[in-house]
Length: 112
Image 1: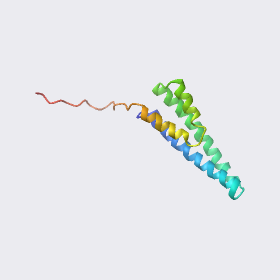
Image 2 (image 1 turned 90 degrees about the vertical axis):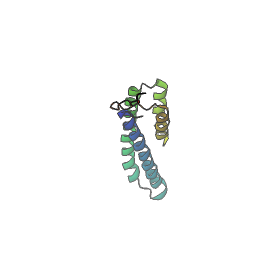
Image 3 (image 1 turned 180 degrees about the vertical axis):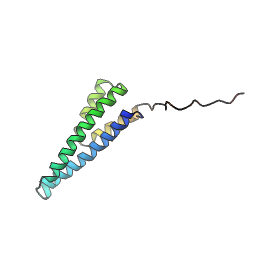
Image 4 (image 1 turned 90 degrees about the horizontal axis):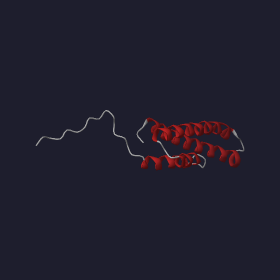
């Protein structure tokens, strides 16, 4: 997706995935290693913010690219399991045609 909304959606999917990683590491330390919840406290808030960022950019991108309601629902559901939001973004990017740059000039054909 070459639109501004598409790029921001990609950033949101990547950020949401990294925040999931941080939250899972924080949960590992909380319940397995040190029994301290500072990692969950910090990364829980970061992940919450990235989750909202993902949903807002999902709605924006769906509107700009005129996605079907089913695709929008799948994108929203993909934000819940870890790492699925990024996979959804990659799947959608492969199926969205790239727009031609607006300022590109048409190629000149030689006269015969």
